[in-house]
Each structure stands twice: as structure tokens, then as C-alpha cells.
Amino acid sequence: METQNYKENRFYGRRKGKKLKASRVVLLEAFLPKVRLRSFGDGETVNPADEFSFSPNEVWLEVGFGGGEHLAEQSRRRPETGFIGAEVFVNGVTSLLAHLSGTEGKGNLAPENVGLADGRTDNVRVYDEDVRDLFPHFKDGSFDRIYVLFPDPWPKRKHWGRRFIGPKNLPVLSRLLKSGGELRVASDDMKYIRWSLEHLMKSQDFEWTAERADDWRKPPADWVPTRYEQKALAQGKKPVYLTFRRK
Ligand SMILES: C[S@@+](CC[C@H](N)C(=O)[O-])C[C@H]1O[C@@H](n2cnc3c(N)ncnc32)[C@H](O)[C@@H]1O
Image (cartoon, rainbow, N blue to C red):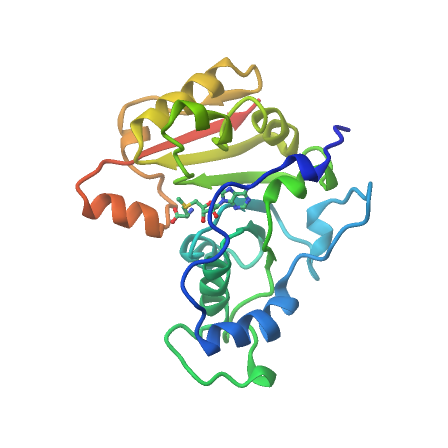
């Protein structure tokens, strides 16, 4: 098992945005503890499927879920699948919590009444810190699918080392995916797409599933739009959707 000192994982993005509304603070204090991934001890390794109160048919990981629109909708559509979502940006975490609790746009939340929205299964575990800190705790082949959607592009050459898809994280993502599992990456930044393709094609562990241009020009059939994707589309950009299979 690879060991990783989490202190090496310096995070360069934003942790906080504008001041949180009172209702979002209630979600953080009263609802996050109900859906938060538990903390793992030093050297503890787990199968993430065991972190749910039911036996999930598959377990999916979403890295950097942003406002959580994708994670909330995928988990609503697939109540039998377990989802682990990681996001450092606290405003994004509260946005996901609002989706999961069905309280978007509502003020005056009573802490004692905040819970999963009606009809939702308890199939999401939230990690509100750097996902790389979690990696050493997960056993090999923990996930059926990993999403990295519209990752920060870090355009300056001196910052390329911060790009999530790259030589440091790809071997870890490969270890964490089951054989036949999928890594899904999307971006509207063509330099990042070229960079990702270069690194993924170099890896012996992944194969690109695309057979024709529409397989990467159009989103996959079970796609759920994300906030950054919507922003890109509104600006006339054309995102690229990559699906790589773990061999
Ligand atoms: C450009 S945003 C995209 C958000 C969302 N996926 C979307 O498509 O709307 C990238 C997000 O990834 C998060 N992020 C980047 N590195 C991360 C890490 N190591 N662990 C957790 N979140 C991370 C950032 O905080 C940011 O919110």
C-alpha cells in the first residue's frame, strides 16, 4: 500500500467565498455531521462501501464536486449506489447540503429539523477537505467510478504540477479503481484536455473508451450538468468529456 503524508498535499484553491447565510451555517452545523465521512485513524484502511448503512451495488467518488449539483442528482437517481464526494470550498459544501436536504433557497432553518430531503436515500458521504488526504485510507479497487469534472486548469506552466490529473494522482486513481471501473474527466479548457490525454494515454492502466468524435464531444448518456459546465456553455465554449476504463 502506498503511504502518503497528508501534509505534503498543499491545497492552492479557494477554501472560502462570500460570507455564508445563516441557513447555510445551520446546514454546516446541524446537517453536515449526519452525512460527513467519518475520520480515519492513522494507518487505517477501509473499503468505502462499508461507510454506508446499506450494502451499495457500486461506490462512486466525485473529486471537487463544486456546488454539488452533479453529486446530488446522480445520488438521487441511483439510491442503491454509494457516493463519496470531496470538496474543499466551504460554500460549495453548503450548496451540496442544501441540495441533499431539499432546502435550496429556504431561510430560517430549524437545526433540529434538518435532514435528508423526502425520498432520498442516505447514500452520500461528504468529505469537506482535500480528497488526497483520504486516498491512503482506501483499499485497492475501492471505486467503480471516479469523476473529476471541470478541474481547476492551472494554466501557468509553473502551476502545472497542481493539476489534479497528472503523474502524482493518476497511479493513485488507478489503484483505487476496480478493474473495468471508469475515470470520467470533463473540461472546457483544451490545454487541460490535451494534458490529461497525454498523461492518461501514457499510463498503462487506462484505456480511452471513445470510438468516434461524438464520444468525447458529447456528454455520456447518464450525464448530469455541472455548474462550471453551464458557465462554459453560456460562454460559447465546447467542453470535452473523457471516459477512461481501468484495465
Ligand atoms: C473548477 S471547480 C469545478 C466544480 C464542479 N466539479 C463543477 O464542474 O461545477 C473545481 C473544484 O475542485 C475543488 N478541488 C480541487 N482540488 C481538490 C482536492 N484536492 N480535494 C477536494 N476538492 C478539490 C475546488 O475546491 C473547486 O471547487
